[in-house]
Every structure is written in structure tokens, then in C-alpha cells.
Image 1 (cartoon, rainbow, N blue to C red):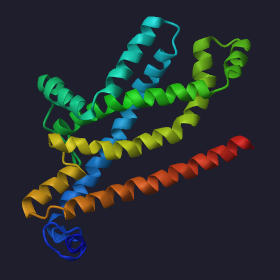
Image 2 (image 1 turned 45 degrees about the vertical axis):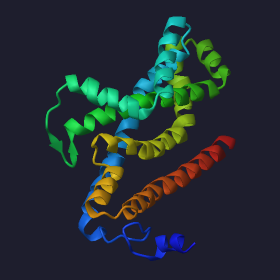
Image 3 (image 1 turned 135 degrees about the horizontal axis):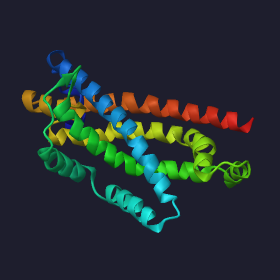
Length: 243
């Protein structure tokens, strides 16, 4: 019991309350927050169009088109993200040489491979979100649009998709929150996000627990308010639909 209590009282290297590293290493964590948010938001944005295409392919009447989409989704949902990162980072982007250019705080040659890997992974999940959103639209909407003379493609674009997108917006926002947490695996390949900052500070200072406690608190401060905000938006949207 005493050894457990010491974790919270003794300011030693393995203490939960040892944050002596902060004055010197705060810039590491600030940079980590910016990179984590940039990775998450850009990845989900880039995933939207491929995901929508995959969802429409899954709903196609062509069995071949359905199988192609289904195979993509199955592969990316059934294999670990870290394995996908390794294949894309060391495989694809070993053949594609990116310019060593920095835009703001983002170094493109290290940022793009991770964004591509995260976006390809996210597209598989967002595709299922879009498919569920499209199927949630009353089938009578398509029949009404067709009865007015709209071709199926235009009916999908002008009638079904706007309603489906409204349905899936909270789920898309949740995907961004999920990606904030999942982007931590990029630290294993040298991306300077939050987990990378914690690991480097812990290795440099010998303070083994404090940096990770700080990072856990930062993730919580990002994810928890965002989740509550999304829940509030969902409640407001449901009230609007009931009027």
C-alpha cells in the first residue's frame, strides 16, 4: 500500500506527479498537440471522398463493384493500423520521394505518409458510416424523386445524399475524435506527435511516468469536451427533426 501511495506523493522518476520536465520540454508537447490535431483532421477530411465513393460502390447493383469495395473495407478494417502504417511508410513512400519542405509547423516528407495511411484506414470506417446514413434515408425519398423525373444519379446527388450527410455528421465528428487517439501509433515511426513527445522526454529525463500522465490528460482534454459537444449537436439535430 505504501509503495502505491508513493506513486502519488514521492516526486521520484516513477511518480505520477513528477512534472519537473515541463519548464524545459513544454515546446515538445505544444508541437505534439499541433501535429496530432493536424494528422487527425486532415486524415478524416481526405478520407471523406474515397469513403463516399466506397459507400456508393457497396450500394451498386454490380456484384463486381460491390466486391471491390467490400474487399477494400475488409482489408483495412481487419488488419492493424500499425501494420498498414509500416507497409505504406516503408513500402509505398520508400519508392515515392517527397520534397523536404516545411509549411508552417508541418514537414511534408514526414507528414504526408502518415496522413495517407490514416486516411486510407479511416476511409474504410467512414464508408460504412456513409452507407448506413444513405440506407437510413426513407426509400420513399428516392421513389418520390424518380416520380418527378429525376434520373437515379441526380436523385442520389440532390435528394438522398444531402439527407444522408446530415445523418452522418455526428459520426464523422466522432471519427475525428477517434483519429486523435489512433494517431498515437505514428510515434512508432518517428512522427513528432504527443506520444513521440512523451517517449522522448521520458527517455531524456529518466522521468518514466509523468510525461505519459501529462499526455493522457491532454488527450482527455481534447477528446472529452469534443465528445460532449458532438452529443449536444446530436440532441439539437434530433429536436429539429421532431418539429
